[in-house]
Length: 117
Image (tube, rainbow, N blue to C red; front, side, top):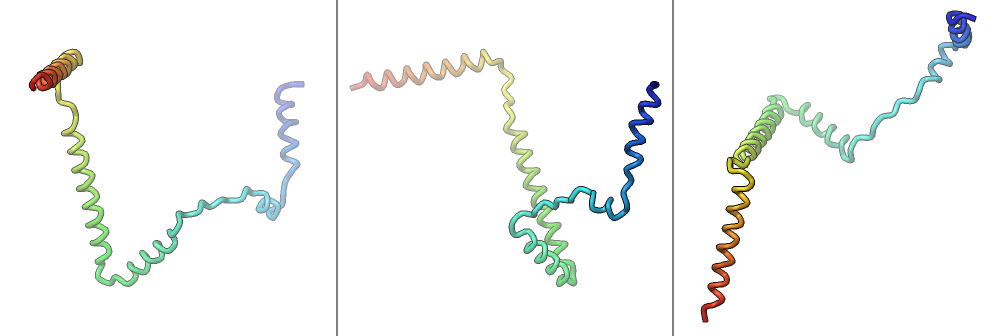
């Protein structure tokens, strides 16, 4: 038996199983709708009501102002993070040496303060 005839036999089994349109509709997988977070419909309805009762477009301006404040806040946060980046160009060994020297100096000052009566 050739490979083509094997494939033809395999697919002929599928071709004979036709379904009517009503059967096809019931054969589809159910669709699942994710549940929104708690309180979401209330907020959505309130937002729609606010927009419907806003003849001058004040809500749009408020939303734009909120968006602008959020952008400015994010920009300030990014700027602060960029400035907080370690700009020390010394090697790790040099940094460790400095920390050890500072620690030794503090310990020396503590021991001297204990010696005084």
